[in-house]
Image (cartoon, rainbow, N blue to C red; front, side, top):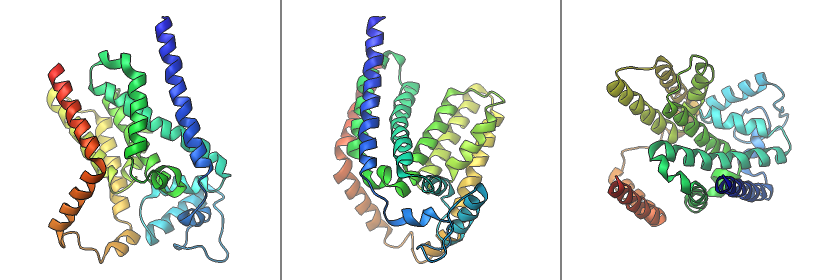
Length: 287
């Protein structure tokens, strides 16, 4: 019992240290670039005269419709950004610190959904390692975690994605859960063009696996996938995104693009890739 209490205290201390450090980094990160535009009802990519602050839910929806038409369809992330840009930055600093903490805790929790619970005795160590890995390997942490516009688009949407995955893996299909899991899936689908389709595919495969192995398909899970796909398609249908991407050819010089991508990825994350391979080998040898 005493050992358990000590572990809980250490666990809370790790969480406190993480929140404090991220808060301090957020505190010293100033508004920059796109942040100023999202203080107002969105009209165009740069602030101009006679701008109007976002004062109501209707203003926020109007702003996001304009943003969808002019710039891109990531209404989940940019809604989060616009909400915080109406308040003192300290409000964002506090909330963002806890959202970063949630990212690590969700990763830790999901890992124990996959591997055996016998590894829980090392949970505090695993959590500390997760935050160290996030610190060292998250790409451009200043832009994706500390900067308001970047955090809303990447950190916050990643937490929504992982939360949805956590709900699916719990396989708790209470009829009341649908009231919040369907909106969660919808906003996850409209997160960004990188992670949203990946999570839609992953969760679809989990649902398919359950359908094959357990001979049943949860109606709520199917509705979540439909909601996520609607959110994703709305994001992709953004006239602003299509206009800005119109001159970009995906398949032009594709082989060189893939080669450069692999080279850059290996240079930055080779240690992480090797560690993952060693971990998989270790887990397979234990089973």
